[in-house]
Image (cartoon, rainbow, N blue to C red; front, side):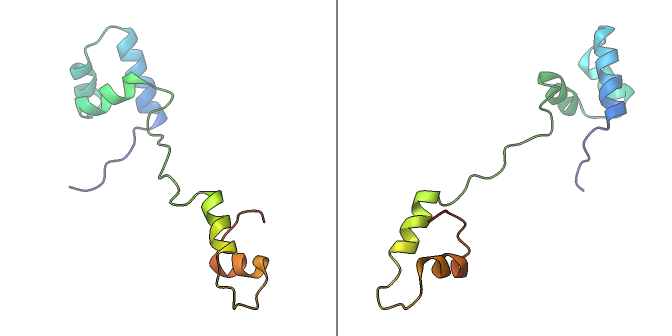
Length: 92
């Protein structure tokens, strides 16, 4: 199976109109050729449908700072340079 596409704004509008006319969710799904699961998810929270918060960060800013300051002591580099080389964006 290929990836599913999010309902367009027109489809969302159709779903809301049909729901206000007291159509059942399965009938709405048949009318706009979508699965009942999509309609159920959409009607649970229309404004947040299709939005996810994303993956949480693996390291916190505190851990990033600690990585910078725990760099080997025999290094001649300054802390800003160490941060740049390691791709750390925490303020120092």
